[in-house]
Amino acid sequence: MRLTQSLVLMTALISTAAVAQLTQRQSTVAAEQTGSPQASPSPSPSPSPSPTPTPLPPPTVSIEKYREPAGRIIGAALTSDRAYDRLAHLTDHIGNRLSGSESLERAITWALAEMKRDGLDNVHAEKVLVPHWVRGEESLELVEPARRKLSLLGLGNSIATPPEGIFAEAVVVRSFDELDALGEGARGKIVVFNAPFVSYGETVRYRSGASRAARYGALAALVRSITPVSLQTPHTGAMNYDEKQPKIPSAAITIESAELLQRMNDRGDHPKLRLKMEAKFLPDAESANVIGELKGTEKPDEVVLLSGHLDSWDVGQGAQDDGGGCIAAWEAVRLLKQLGLRPRRTIRVVLYTNEENGTRGGNGYRDAHRTEIANHVLVVESDSGVFRPVGFGLASTAPLQARSNLQAILKLLSGISADRLAANGGGTDIGPLMREGALGASLDVDGTHYFDIHHTPADTLDKVNPQELALCVATMAVVAYTVADLPQRLAE
Image (tube, rainbow, N blue to C red; front, side):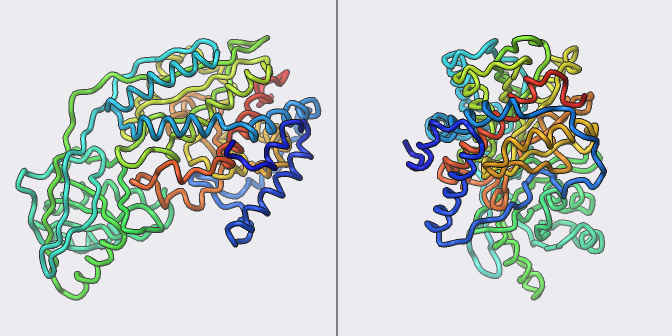
């Protein structure tokens, strides 16, 4: 067992009060081991502002009968290595999993076989055609005023440079306003967007800045990585082109390189760069969403959906984004089956394909289940990493009664401090369902360090804490079981 001996004692516990005492001890021990104070909850990478001040109606659910099963779920999750072992296999034996790649298809085949071995119901794959973008070789070199290699990662969906590359002067701007002010001064140059990180939602728009630069005649665009922290690590991600503008190559560079070029630009050094990229699209490839279920006893046609995305970028191992989210959702369902906790409604786990550079998995699931969307009682996505869970986010458009009821249900998780209900929630893959009226939510975690490694070679298994992963499993399993077993729907 990798988990601490104090966690093993939880095997016999069936009350969240006892779990709370041990969890508090675990937090204290962890703080002592690291020499740092216990962390307070931080905002998750998913949009989760402060709880809404709108008055809520009284809850219509009673959670008393769920305290005992919640305690069993938490104890079982925190004394099992299954989730971490499965994530280790996914990351170490299969690796990163970009859409269209052989490694993603191996991951899909493996997940199907393992779900069947778990004895889940209705295990199957639902085919989806996905884009097949290939990075190829790429390099960036500062040629003048000093020669040195600079780290970069091409942005997903970018085109290539000519075979000989692009050699041009770099001009640096900190915003789109500065680019507009520069105007024709960008013609024939490589535009560098050195926009400091404000938030992911605010800053990520610069990833698609290539078309803005192309409007003024730029030859290529380089984007400061979308992260608050850098140790010479570039962060990739998807970019999109404005079809009304010429397409130019685009790549991410490190904060260190962006600031170096900024200083040179400000001094009037006229830095010159040589950029080479071989990126290209191959024909669309066949892929699939992976689905398994715990069939409901009384209302099997009504569904509580737990999900993550199985694809990842082609660097690192896709451990936090989103291998861990997939494993947490999957293990929550497997654990309920192991414990003999079969609720009234069906709990379905979906491992989506192609979240990172196309969202065809989410759209494909919506299309395949369009006639059943009204029977999706709650759809949940875990795609903010598997750090310490602090609760759930619920869509800001959710009925107030659903919010009141979920807030009551989360009290079952107060013993592990995962009882916060954020004012918003959802996700890219469940977005198509939410736009059709499904009630959406997301696992809310302490994402303080998520964007340190997001979309980088550093997103590897060693960044996953086995105890925090187990807590994510417990949180998703308790909520899914309770919502699926209620006499009425969550919003009623």
